[in-house]
Length: 100
Image (cartoon, rainbow, N blue to C red; front, top):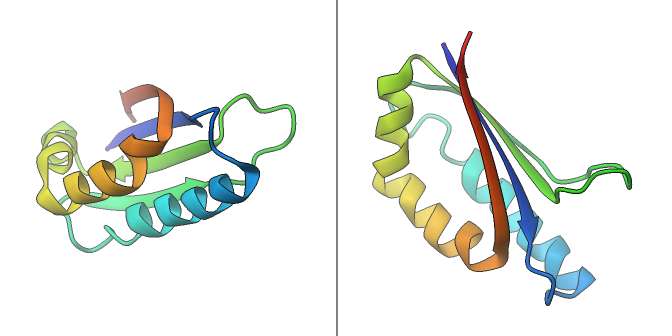
């Protein structure tokens, strides 16, 4: 199994109300990929961090293997969500992929 963890910060110029809507859209979009991408075992988006957090959104996903993770990265369904719901609104992205 391969775990794929992403942390994003949203752009500073977004209002609090915009951030709520954007977080919801990211969560809905990414979690809707379950069952649509070969090798994707689990996907969860967390948007309600504690005040001590310095990230706005976390993606936790599990893949059967590294090849499945690579396939996810270029899968049209994933690319569509990333290009419309994530990338336009985020300023930073941290990623950690590891085998378990």
